[in-house]
Length: 93
Length: 254
Image (cartoon, rainbow over all chains, first blue to last red; front, top):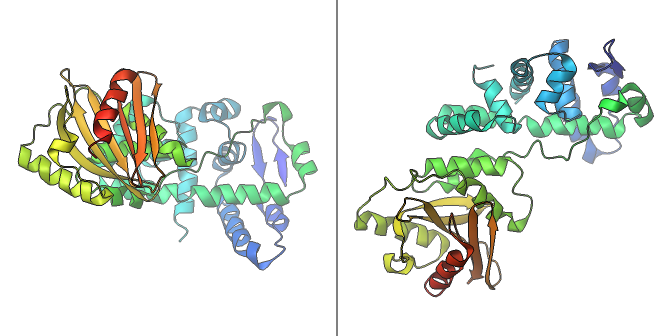
């Protein structure tokens, strides 16, 4: 489930519930959903700061500067968090 | 995670400022390992986008909306994960032109390839990166130029003999291959007396014949036409009238 942090702007994602939400209706969707589930599991395993940054930028499509403002972090930190997340995903083969 | 990952990801996300982007593009053009890392990171975009899209499509929307801070939600068009595969870039690099290839690849990464006609926009994007110093130092001999022209001409099925591509007031410098959307594209680079670049691009895309049209984008003017299954574009920091005149000259020869 998506939940609001005490700041109101910083989001976190409960990935167990997210996986529960990914229910496939047919074989055609199953592969996509397995991939999505795997991706979400990887993201769910990241530190909370990386997770919330990825969520803002790639799910909510915040620009880096907007994410930096929302999270109170320098843009360089936003960049590092996103890179860490995508590097973790890049290890999936 | 490598030291370069943050900048590579920012490039993929189109978040680098002009100076850092240009510097990184130059490094990418010269560093195969860095390009491979770019590609690894770029490939994570689609699964990442799919994962969030699946979640958003299947999760209870009412619950999501209730959980999100409405005033801070910013919806954006789905242009994030649009990087081009570097293998397409590599396939296009028949003759040198790493800088041009990198620029084309950069343009393609920024969402310029959404429509069949956007190849012109893509070319305009990388043409803007060229300066008076890009091609003017190149002074290959005529034999080398003829070899380049023959090679790129064969790739797009056109007779690009030196006399066919010669243009008044412009010095031909080099020819190289790029690719757009799987179709080979020959590029002939010229400079005027000041060194300003002018490009003739020929895309073997099977397009139906079309008469010359012209347009401009910022300081760039261009003219284009299609014939014999090939689309042609003349583009440079020239007037629109000059672009059309060059096109009229070329359309009789190539």
